[in-house]
Image: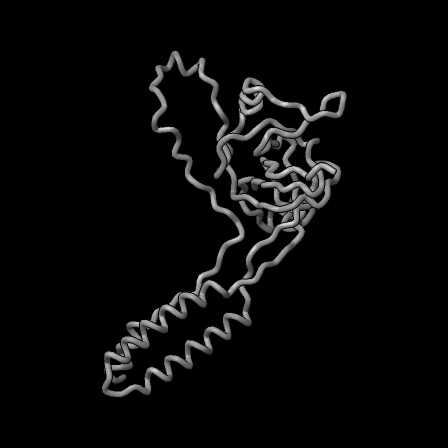
Length: 238
């Protein structure tokens, strides 16, 4: 390999990145400014349950079924093989052209830098949006919350206006969910098709073939289980 070839081999390192569907659990840092308490005081302070999840799915509720089964329409990014191939061909062509440059190391360096910038730009365009209906199973004790206080109507059909005290009570006892702060009280029967939801996946061990045989069913085909649901957006009232 000649000097220019060795230079290219060392310089042309370009990564093609892919955005992941699932959100990863974030570390709860807590409130560093909270006052110190004694063991005696801790018994009197309200505590929030910290939910352990395996990630979350965001989407639109398609339908509700019996036994807390439901279907969520999820949109995510998927690798586009055609775009990847196009970018690889472009990269190979540019490398071949740079290899033709003789006795001009400054021009080689300029072209290498230019190619790096271009490939970085192209790496952001290697995915396509895919929408898929995902069938899920809520746990019996699933926690249901809302990002905003749910809309309620009085006996005259007017929207109920909540006081600060009402909102405080509705926000109380909310579980700590990754990526969220304050949530408000809700229940499973408040779920409606077309709502935007965040469904938190239960942390479970992947089933083995032995488990499936012992259960007499294919565990690998079971619906992912959901431990918490957050109503991110209500259906617009007609």
